[in-house]
Length: 171
Image (cartoon, rainbow, N blue to C red):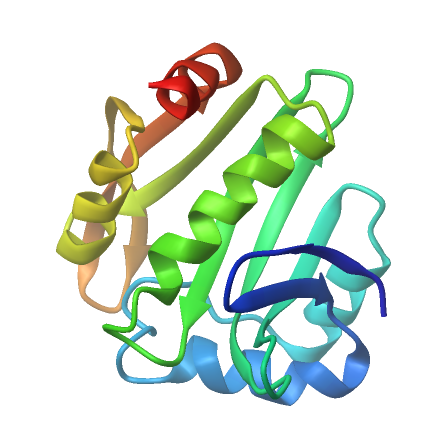
């Protein structure tokens, strides 16, 4: 499968059907299930076939061991990339920060996006702290935008524009 980008320790490649079991295990893992949506096998196959969505695996360069996955939506006409979902299996090793920095570089430098954005549940404290640390701008809260078994949940929207990314990169 095609490698999309790499960082110092990680590489990102297109997912293949044999990766779906790992992806689904990460979606349902106790550390992730409150923060990422769980999809069926068939939905993941459709995501891999989509021209606009990217279902991507995150692996260690050293031994190709999977450490996570992400789902992105790329709107080429508007030059916007949305990070829809990310799950990292090995917590507290800095992989999340490393891969999101790499994803921003890929979005802005490699494929010419103007805007990178995501939403995050308001109780995902670690995610929110990371997005702020990476210089993303808080745009607002989608109040009670999702309902699950625990009731209504709100989502915060964060974004980064290419010009902000370039300023941060130079600074």
